[in-house]
Image 1 (cartoon, helix red, strand yellow):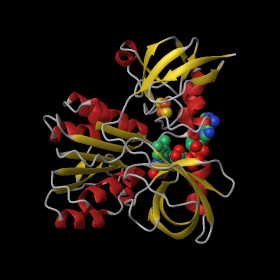
Image 2 (tube, rainbow, N blue to C red; image 1 turned 90 degrees about the horizontal axis):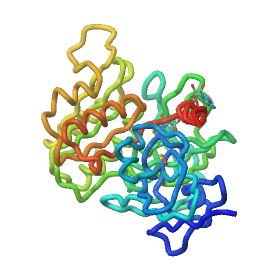
Image 3 (cartoon, rainbow, N blue to C red; image 1 turned 45 degrees about the vertical axis):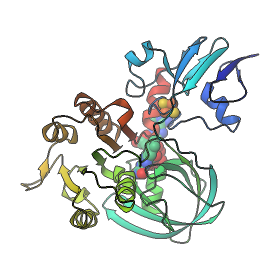
Amino acid sequence: MGFAVNVRQFDEPLDVEMGDTILQTALNAGLQYPHGCQSGNCGACKSRLHSGEVEMSPYSEFALTDAEKESGLILACRSVPWSDCEVAYLEQDEVVAHPLRKLTCTVRELDRMTHDIVRVRLSVEAGGPFDFTAGQYVEVSFDGLPPRDYSMANRPSSETLEFHIRHIPDGAVSAYANTNLKVGDTVHVDGPHGISYYRAKHTGPIVALAGGSGLAPIKSIIEEALGEGAEQPIHMYFGVRDEHDLYLEDHFQALAARHANLSFTPVLSEPSGTTARRTGYLADVIAADFAGLDGSKVYLAGPPIMVETCVEQVRQRGAGDEDCHADAFYTEADKAKLEAAS
Ligand SMILES: Cc1cc2nc3c(=O)[nH]c(=O)nc-3n(C[C@H](O)[C@H](O)[C@H](O)COP(=O)(O)OP(=O)(O)OC[C@H]3O[C@@H](n4cnc5c(N)ncnc54)[C@H](O)[C@@H]3O)c2cc1C
Ligand code: FES
């Protein structure tokens, strides 16, 4: 016994079994329902409940604010129907729909970027052609380990897929990638996913905020924008703890030297010595540098705390919800916290 859920964008209603979520039922049926974390953290599956009743298991305030909930929005990944329902997922301002692929890849290059970030370059051997929009991510599986989400750092037109993987203390997959992975290994990649991608039609200013390995999708977005001839001001900030966490600085300085519309600002939050660089938390640096962000597109990626505080800050400075495109790098620990609250 289940409930019929009419998703306005789909031709046929979903038959959602008792206790199942709307998102899981749609994905099991092979339908493209916008989603990210599938655990109530990112907000990518935000939908409007037009009629009927759902029960939502715990989610983060970042994914759905109380005001949004009161206005009738739900998270499809946390919503279990209690009656027949009618819902519609929120449409993106520039829709992209790439076929979901299951790729078999080979590790071509491994480069140490910092003491805890490895750059992994993969060639696609089977399952392609693979297409994505700059800023998206895939599920990557190494050698029988559980899949994890990693964002492409390359432009979509590149021959190889590039990832920046930060070693998380006690992390199963990131530790493997940083210590055991070898050139020639086979890697499985599923995707692309994600809605925090580059909006090519937007011609207003761009603010791009990367924290740590959050540089990966921001690099892809910036390179794509410049490669496609974007002429608007692009303000890029790269936040890390200390000097030894910075990487690809020469690359971005060279890009900024070639493109007068790009500014690149590294920011240290916990410098161990005196420094001529900008210091502090990215959210405070943004507050100091921008009086208003109305009309700007803001792209953010990196640790959840950095992304959440920066999103709050840019919203306070007038950036519209529809203009904030954020990927917080939630881990299993963050997901477990929400599950424990269920
Ligand atoms: C959309 C998206 C894009 C991402 N892109 C990138 C990227 O480009 N680069 C990057 O470096 N990272 C990225 N991440 C993060 C990445 O997906 C992984 O979460 C990260 O690499 C850690 O994985 P792990 O297997 O090493 O750690 P995990 O095994 O997931 O462990 C992480 C932490 O959680 C703890 N933990 C594990 N399981 C549990 C549990 N059940 N209960 C409580 N605690 C637990 C561990 O002890 C550890 O401290 C992204 C995440 C998302 C959501
Ligand atoms: S997919 Fe629902 S909140 Fe992330």
